[in-house]
Length: 373
Image (cartoon, rainbow, N blue to C red; front, side, top):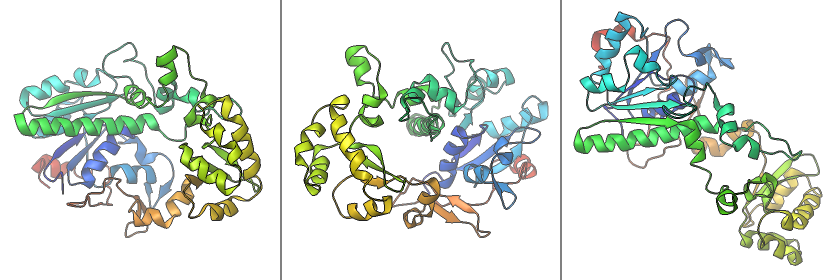
């Protein structure tokens, strides 16, 4: 597999770091999960349980080995250093400054392992005015301005449905780690990566920050294309209370739809910028979609070249045969659901190891043999 032989030491908890190392483990990396003393990784005990394990933990920590280390103790540090000297990658997600206070920060590791790729993931980064501010995903999205733009039809902000700060922080870190490993392969030198989840969110706003940079004025979410200000990129309620989405704002899709409904007289509304000017078309769609149930509209749109989708639940999405066909849902021998990897290679594809380690399960093995499996 792509990452066979790569040694990854994971000190992180919860989502961003563990998801990063999960994707690396799925593609062959040798990942050792360092759990804190006591109850270990918090997600072992969070959320719904099945077959005696947390579903959250199973789908972020599978395929890794587990060791508990107290990094404040001499014994814990001794084991850490035995692993750090040979590691290719170290991932940590403590608050800024913690690893340095523990004596296991990048500077000290680099001194004994110049090729180390050391990645720190935090809410606001290792530098800057907010570096000490505690936060999880919702607070980070709020600071990034994204909660304000997740505006409901009542005009109030709504909690986002996806932990985008965690997700983009994780993927930013994965991208950076792989870049650093590419450099290491050519030069033998490692690097340090400071990933801020806030930065990762803000980097993904070019499609909505235009008005701010062009005029100096803030965005009115309901007027913007991604938030329903464009009639062909909005949500509509159906006769039975179900919802559907039109998700393609190109004029060609509006022409296809309005032609089918013999209402090309409304096409010019789809040709002007998002905002109140498009509201007559949006109002027409609101009325039109209430003529049929969601299922009836799904049947009507079948085969038409229009970006349309039913608004489904997450349960619906996982139960769709497409999820099984793409390998995004599978089952282990005990019938536990396994969420697959989105990285699909033609050559050397990832291999899902559904096993999850018991807490500190590999302590003796790792102390005795280090990275050897």
